[in-house]
Length: 141
Ligand code: SF4
Image (cartoon, rainbow, N blue to C red):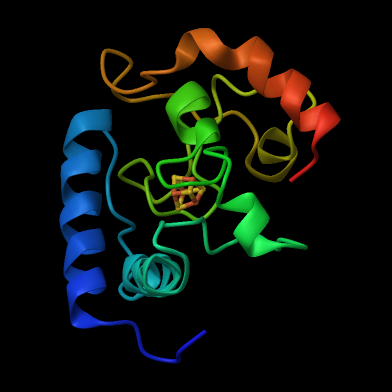
């Protein structure tokens, strides 16, 4: 993977992040540099794989993973539970929303209960939670 992502991919991801924050009722992280770090990782994957694979996870086979939509940003966990593992989409204090996660999800163990400040926005795939949990067991990733 190249060190520096292309300007085109960086711009694409920066625009996407701004739009998705608006659409989902979330915020960029208040600490300088966190958003940019994740955007750089997403842009590198756009250059390498043609898709913005989540940069905060390890994949045994990135090309294989990119065939699924599970971890293509905005990933299934974001679109179903409004939870962002990478702190790209957070509440105003910089915490990821955990309110809708299944009880055994790592996000609840790490951050505790974080309420959704804008429950009327986001979670476009909220009706797919059952399929997601089946997939999490069948294809841990
Ligand atoms: S956890 Fe999901 S929403 Fe957050 S950066 Fe990764 S792919 Fe995007």
